[in-house]
Amino acid sequence: MALTRDALRKILDAAFATKTNYIGCDECLAQLDQYVEQVLVGKEIPEALQLVQEHLEDCPECEEEYLALLTALREGLEENGPS
Ligand SMILES: [Zn+2]
Image (cartoon, rainbow, N blue to C red; front, side, top):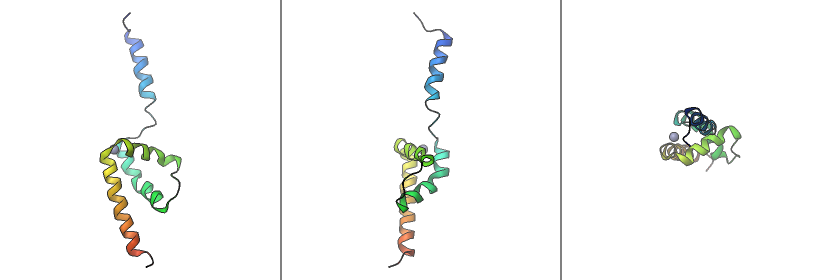
């Protein structure tokens, strides 16, 4: 039995509904500095930033941005920190 158009739409809607928790690159990059700060201070990642974490695991481009930012901030901290 072939799927009706309505049935197909319901399946697609359900599939996309499960994706609503995921953020895109724009949102990820917008919150990236907050996320990096949390990582640098060694704090637990708050729930709001866990979407960023999930995005970074899936997106090599944003992960690259993240690593660059992390490295830059870490070097900044070392320069300004007590010696
Ligand atoms: Zn991304």
